[in-house]
Amino acid sequence: MIRKIIHIDEEKCNGCGLCAEACHEGAIDIIDGKAKLMRENFCDGFGDCLPNCPTGAISFEEREAPEYDQEAVKKAQEAKKMEDMKHVHHEGGCPGSRMMQFAQREAEDNSPVSAGKTVSRLAQWPCQIKLVPTQAPFFDGAKLLIAADCTAYAYAKMHEEFMRGKVTIIGCPKLDAVDYTDKLTEIIRNNDIKSVTIVRMEVPCCGGLQRAAENALRNSGKFIPWQVVTISRDGNILD
Image (tube, helix red, strand yellow):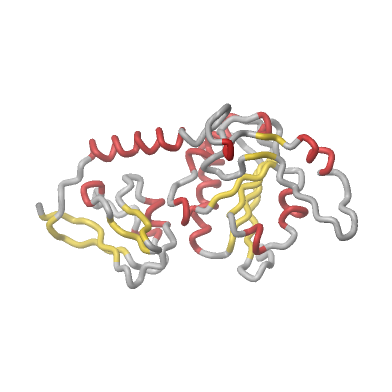
């Protein structure tokens, strides 16, 4: 059938992944650093992905395409939720995802660092957003740090200035190609979170992490102090 559907200009696409996040139907994937319409029958033609494209790579076109399949979209969304649940490990499962809280760090958090000594301020394991459980003892009364993966490499004092005294969870919306909103909403809603700090890079794709955290704060129904800090690519704080 002839219908309205999106077109992605790969020459303009910078692979930021914002369109894939905005597409609730899951029609778009990031393949080899470029956005691609992988499931035409998942595209409803409403264009939620268009306003999020920073390079103008997405437009509408009228062409032969499969009919929008709402039932298939629902099944795919349910399958994705089930897959995400597999990453929640309370006991057993992958040893690398087994939950741990580093009790000795609690005492270290308030102790000064000796000259020349470097101390890790990571308070728990796992720390990846995709792997961390939505409920855990280390979230009880926690100051939550939601950080982009690259920030710890770009900003030299990440452990002392941001991670110290906080529970740190990290992610990259571009590499994970997932919307963290639902997971972060559950973490904030189901635990006694005292504050939220979002640390992101200045690059556009990091906006996905900030939006997910801000949406999660709104969706949680809680009023929690929060702030956003942006790190430049050369390792400085921009705001």
